[in-house]
Every structure is written in C-alpha cells, then in structure tokens.
Amino acid sequence: MSENLTETLIGALVLALAGAFFLFAASSTGNGFGGQESYPLRARFDSIDGVGVGTDVRLAGVKIGRVAAVGLDRETYLAETTLEIDRSVAIPADSSAVIASEGLLGDNFVQIVPGGEDRMLKPGEEIEDTQGAVSLINLMMKFVTGNGGGDG
Image 1 (cartoon, one colour):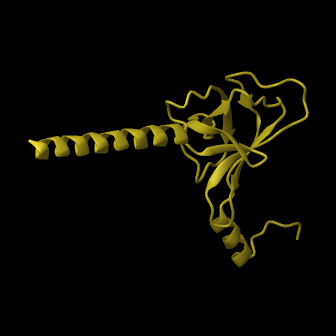
Image 2 (cartoon, rainbow, N blue to C red):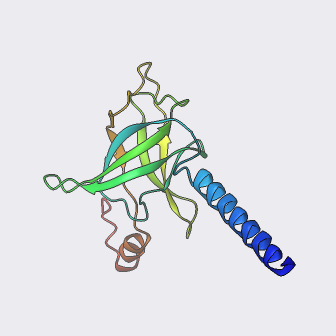
Image 3 (tube, rainbow, N blue to C red):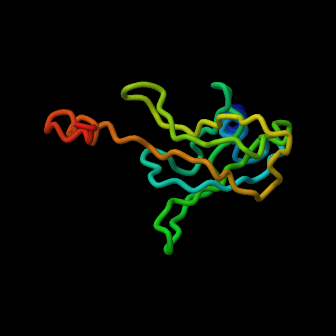
C-alpha cells in the first residue's frame, strides 16, 4: 500500500514539474500565457534570410517584439512580415526596419531604427523603409571574383 502511495506522489511531482516547465517555456518565448500586449506592424523586405516566425525584433539592442508571420507577395516578390511590437513601445512613422546579424556567424533579427517624426505608427500600418538581409556568401563571391560593382 505504501508502495502505491509513493509511486502516486512521484508521478504527481513529475507532472507538476512538467507543467511548470511548459509554462516557463511558453512565457519566455512570448507565445502565450505571458499576458504581454502587443500590436502588429507590417514590413516588406527583398530578402529575409535567417528570419522566421519567432525571430526577435529589437530597438537599440533591446527586444521589443517578435516576427509573428512571414509570407510572399506574389505580385512584387517581396517577403512580407508581420511584427508584433510591445504595446508600451511607440515607433515613429519614418522608422526603418533592417535585417541585422548578431555577428559574423550569429542569428539574424529585425532591427528597428527609429526616425524623428512626431507621428507614431498605428497597429496594422507598414514600415516603408526596409533593408533586407545581406548574404555573406554573395559578398565573399563578389570579393573573390572582383565583381564588386565599383565605379571602376
């Protein structure tokens, strides 16, 4: 009888730990249960290599949101993204969005470069000024082959 009670208590402890781990994982990735309110902004890029759903959106190196959706505009062939921005952060209307990297071999993220305009972007509006990802391989190939495209 005491053996069954011990097994039941250990099972309950394992389930409680698994639940706590699940809640921690969900809240730290920003995918639910965190309660953080956000608003969507749209941005189109010519290339989003290394960026997908869940990628960080940062301003001055501080995470202010995440990429919520990625798609392709079949008319312009641009990558469309939806960025979920923390509601406490207002983004000036003339800001730009840049695909940046944490280093030579680091992960990519979306960097917001704030503008100076007084008007702020409203939920659902688009960041017009964007710069896509720079391919390290393409840069090295241009350097090696001498096709730098200079004034020459």
